[in-house]
Length: 122
Image (cartoon, rainbow, N blue to C red; front, side):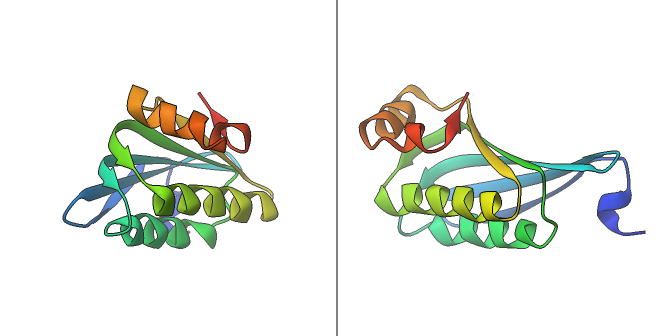
């Protein structure tokens, strides 16, 4: 039995000076879902925290990864690139990525860059 076989959620985090990435795993039968909460700024200086967190999830081949953007205050081109890359990797493995509850400023960036046409935003 692995840690993810446990029905209780498991939570862990990655940090950089400007970004905190909090991940929780949820299993419902055979379905594996990760919730990822981003707090702070996703930019060139902090994108490594997100890519490290998502790389750790990749081997588990989750059905769904939901990234909560409600506490993300800023995202630059490198951060957007990391989100698009994560979406591509998850789709290749049969999973999907959803961006949830973006802050109004972040939503505007997603719209202006057309990322919201590539990745589902709720």
